[in-house]
Image (cartoon, rainbow, N blue to C red; front, side, top):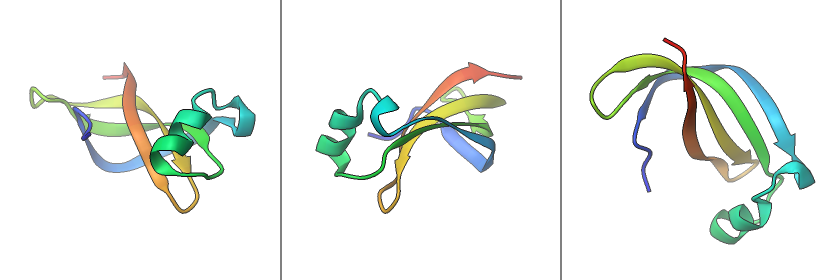
Length: 79
C-alpha cells in the first residue's frame, strides 16, 4: 500500500518515540515485514498531499535494521 502523500526531500529532526517492547504493534509489524528491532520514529519533512498542496508536516513511521522504514503517516501539518 502506497502512502496517500509523497515525501519531498530529506526527513529532518528525527527522533525515536519508542523501541523494543514499547512499540505496541510490534507483533503486527513482525508478521507483515519480518522480525527486527522495531522502533517508532518521528521527523519533519516537506510533503505533497493528494490534492497537490505542498507543506511541511510532522510524520511518524516504523523502522527496523535490514527492513527499512515502513507505514508512514502524517501526524500534524505544520505550515
